[in-house]
Image (cartoon, rainbow, N blue to C red; front, side):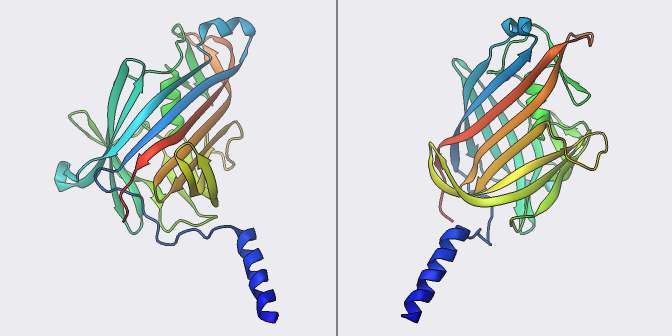
Length: 277
């Protein structure tokens, strides 16, 4: 009877605490691994109401991501390319990011940017100011918030752009409560693992780390409250990412303020083909 009581107690504790995070995590960079995502963006709370006619309020497009074979870049730098194809209706584009991975983490070493991005609202030459910085398009704003294309970059090799030093996308080992700096360019981005647990998506059910991005503007010691980015990472790769940016400012090209907006973006996994380790 005592043994049964002990078993039930252990079972209850296990169910309460949820699944244990993996201690041997590494990102799945096998050549041929493939993911398909659905990305939706939405502009809401536009004020004044007279500005709403200048926006497509929401849009959706699709991204296919594939891991390529190991390549050699400048100075005999070996890296794994991840190729992304973004599609909407009859438009598509390709971009490539290059990564290295070792026992200390996953690092982005370079990228080849795309030059045309479909799917974001038409704005009649409006510009977007957020936290004192002005962006020519919502795509530029999204890229900045997602940590892409920082102000300070190293040399270019043709159109390939290198990070110096490489960016720590993930810092191993992963565990709840861990923090590390992703970037400290025009503003600082810190990553913070807040949870590990189940997540349900169109691609299936997973156990994933929840990683919150904390943004520090203008040298402040506390993260900004208007901006939130969460990503969900599992041994199958990136599962989901969502961004919320509140109280952005719409301006003319000469900088005159016209009004305000809130920006929401959601990326979620639709299907995948990832080789077992």
